[in-house]
Image (cartoon, each protein chain N blue to C red):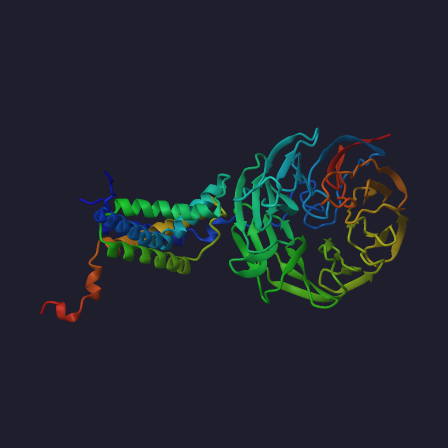
Length: 410
Length: 143
């Protein structure tokens, strides 16, 4: 008697279809959370609000280099960093690496295998900006692949292939949003960070929308428009639906938008720095040079931004846009970064950073010992990442080097 | 004294017939097992491997070779099975929906179950039913 009788085959088919009907995406994906998480610096500009602010209260008076490592970067920006759960995550050119913060030793490295990998990196999956850490996962973009890796082991947990490059990704709660073409649809995508299963898509007009910041249950995106206009929109983070959109004059930076959001408002840097209320009403606009707001930080009711044309750091009142102070910094990094802790704003420079007093802009100390000399000619020698201030140490990437700096306190 | 090689036309004919079988089966299995190979590739990625593009062709060729050598049934039945499996895979994706199989083991298992369901249904029709009756003319039917 045959093992595969018609009755048995039909029973297998029925059971399989019942399984397929029962296991819907809503069963697979996790319940959405909107909390900010507990990681110190989970993304490229702090948390998903993009304020580049940390609540550290023990600012050092000087720093010395604890360790430094050299990596390769795949873009004009400095090597991307994230800090979470006592692990420093580094985006090397073709691998994500997890380092021990105390001595810089490598815990694990993960490179997404490429079918035609070769030694000169022309056929590798390149790590793209930015890296995010959500719970116990590292979210990384390898060319057109969105991947989740275990924070403790580096093991691949899920991968979602897209059909296009990804210009911007942002993780908020346990949801990661990005722009891209997936399943033939050009859209803003939101995936569950635990499983990679889709939460929602937004593809009303097929335009590319870049997620720039999120707070509470709101996600903010920008959309490039033809001519000197761009649009910022507020989405419901649970459904993707648009609450409001506002078209603004000016040209977005080719390197991508930079924005931060607080309970009081949204701040986006393009040719000029624009402040919007949470309901989309434009509050003020500040113009300093041609790339004002390329580096941005928001804290202490102030907005800090760099004017690379004038080589200045400007602090503006968040409520009105009135300048509080201006400090000249001759070696501003391009692109650079800003970050803020309890009483210090750190300004990235081509050779390290300047630490300025938050309220006055006076220099407290500096680190100018970073070396940007390297053999990799693709690295931008003027690029520098934002300083990640912690209670014990400060971390920064300058060009293709990563520095851990020991704080000295008097 | 000279020697000449005699061409064994019987062996040549058998070889050509076998090659023809292989090509035909290869085309059929690319329809039927494309979904299964995608699921296999996904599992490999989760284990840290990524198949090169040519590996897909090798996979089809291996399946086609196994079927060519091992299958002794009717080519008509095999054709019906492969076409129905392909059509069934498309139909279950339409009916039950689809999400990225690379996302989680549960999602991978679901896709595999749906493929097994489509293949089982196709096998029940192709190998365990009198599907030829559908194409018989009315004249041949008993009166």
